[in-house]
Length: 158
Image (cartoon, rainbow, N blue to C red; front, side, top):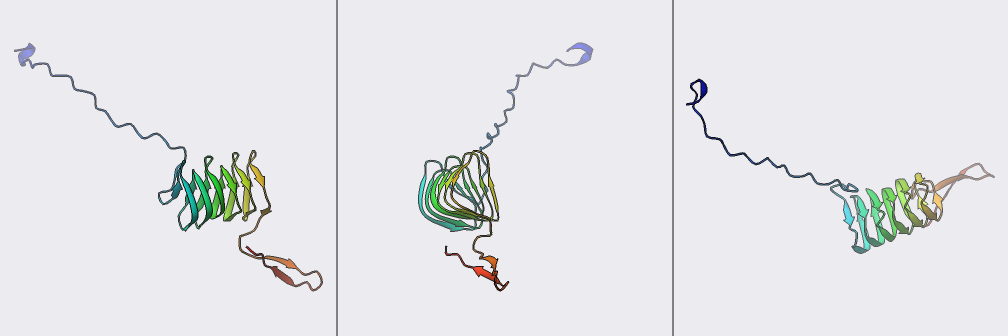
């Protein structure tokens, strides 16, 4: 019997500390759950179409036409025609690029080809060799006939 009439209890074993799993380290770039990814080290030749986003970390040759975003990361190398809602280039692209919304060339981008979009952003450090067309792709440009004052529509072949 212990002090003040309480029974002494045997010492209990020390318990091991509770370990919680470590959180996953943050990824360099988040990818939407419905994105098609061409991984670094992978090569794709052909045509890619659809409604999802596309991220190219590896090599791509052919054509991309999606209604989502197209991203060519700094490790991506592309020889293709690219079309998407928004196209962001941080790697190397040879081919014409069109976007329904915006084209962005990051500081590390190298693009050889024409770009067509209503909004275009070329960051300092990007390399670009081609023509810029600031319009919505696929819509003819209207011009005034100086003699008649009537509007004319020029069609461009694509």
